[in-house]
Length: 453
Ligand code: NDP
Image 1 (cartoon, rainbow, N blue to C red):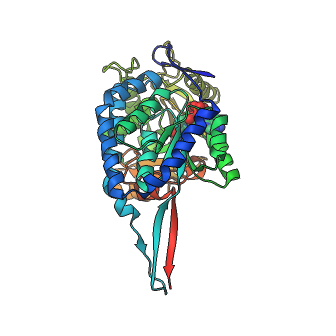
Image 2: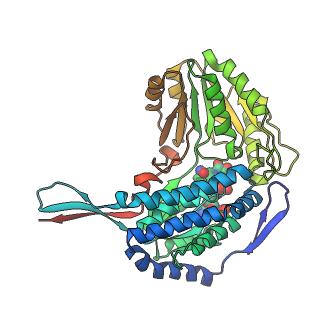
């Protein structure tokens, strides 16, 4: 079957590729299986050298990767370059820190010696989305490679060349053949790969729908899985917040990557006493964003990655307005192929898509609340639990509120970001398991107790 990638800035077909035949898929899995013993038995120093070479290869190919990301899913040039740099830094980070994370941990028992040892599992399937087409891969891959695992990637169908460029960079860096493989396959084939005994586990970043399907297959197969799903992060503005700081954070978090970020602030929960001033300033700043060609340095808001995603977003906006939300800014699709302007919906309330669902695009929902206690209640009144931020002139108060948020990451006076030093992941329907930091590298390892009487 032929799959087309459409450039979201132009609406033109960018690239066509064929899905792999069963024999090609089998060859990738066989190569992974053959590569595992050698790679897992290498010293950490040796794997670290390869990771450093991968970081260098990414840096030397940052222009190619940027152009491909921009053409395939419409990322702003500046954001795409920053994404590649972040991936290279993550490789360097794990090269430097994996030894500390993976050393045996002595545990006092009544035995002569007892300790925990971390052993790699084998080949992990990574099912990845298009929104950060390079970072999502490396967020999993850098720790997985240092752990001694091997991996096969089923990337989103609209970013096939990003997947191929990643594979080329890894090869150029000297990663042995088979340690990383790209599978150009559809979702049915991905399920078959997960059922294959040569694959021991799966990690997925994407929608709840994809998560249910892939975690269901993993469950039937009793294979470990990590699910990094959607979010509808609260951005809580208390009456003592520094408005300059909060408005700058709100614009960066909601409109960066055209709003297509799982940890973007989506629900702006604002205490009445400051609400009018915050909303006015936020709308003023958001109105300055310039939608356009993502490869043009003057553009500050990229199109959405696909036209169907733009249409789905607009349906959520229309349905919310029909239920009483007030459009304050934007809220009408742009004339371009997949563009949507910076938009704000005020008076968002329960029962509206903007309250209940994830809006994966540049639309901010304003929810006005009476006080701090109501802010916490509304922030937690969601099926999602990925991240959240709290803005207050009193950092201790902010921290007190942050600790009450039912999320995987709570930030005070800063936007939620993934940071290689901190674990990343969600609670509730935002998924389970963790990526990054020490917790992330242990996810796909056998945590083995050794006891010597
Ligand atoms: P999907 O969740 O469908 O896609 C993400 C990845 O999962 C892709 O590689 C996709 O492959 C794959 N996938 C989807 N269904 C299955 C399945 N049944 N079995 C195996 N793999 C599967 O995202 P969409 O592109 O459809 O975006 C829809 C919504 O998902 C967005 O509007 C947003 O709400 C959410 N999303 C959240 C992300 C996040 O970072 N949390 C990232 C991307 C999307 P393929 O492309 O071949 O279908």
